[in-house]
Length: 161
View 1 (cartoon, helix red, strand yellow):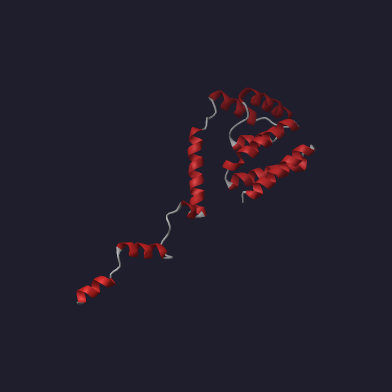
View 2 (cartoon, helix red, strand yellow):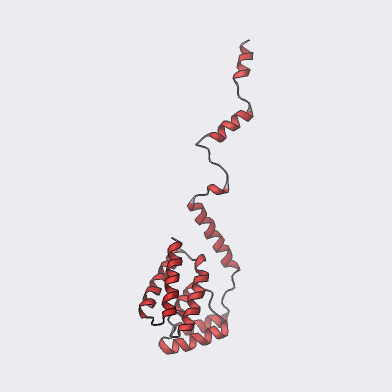
C-alpha cells in the first residue's frame, strides 16, 4: 500500500516541466528578452560583418586621399571637389568628417547628408567626435541651411543615446 501512495505523490514529467517554466529563476529562451549588452554585441558583430563586404579604397583612391589630407584652405576645397568628382563621396566616416572643412556650402550640405545616412552604423565615440566637429562648424558657418542641417543631425544623434 505504501508503494501505491508513493506513485501518486510523484509528479509527471509534464507537471515538472510546467513548474520549471513558471519559476522566476529560469530564463526564457525567447529572443525578445535579450539584454542591452547582447543587443549591442549583436549589432557590433553585424557591423563588423558588413564592413568585410564593403568595398575598400583602390590604390589610386588611397593615394589621392593621402595627398588631399595634407592640404588646407582653398587648395583643400579645390582638390576635395576634384576627388569627389573622380572617386565619389568617401565611404569611411573619418574621411567624411575631414570633408566638412570644405569652403563650399553646397558641398558641405552633401557631406552632412552622407553623415546622416551613415550615422546609424557608427559607435557612440565616433558620433561624439562628429558632434564636436559639427559644433565648431556651426559656430563658423554663415549659411542658414548648413546650420539647419547641423541642428537636425544633433537631434538625430540625441535620439540614439
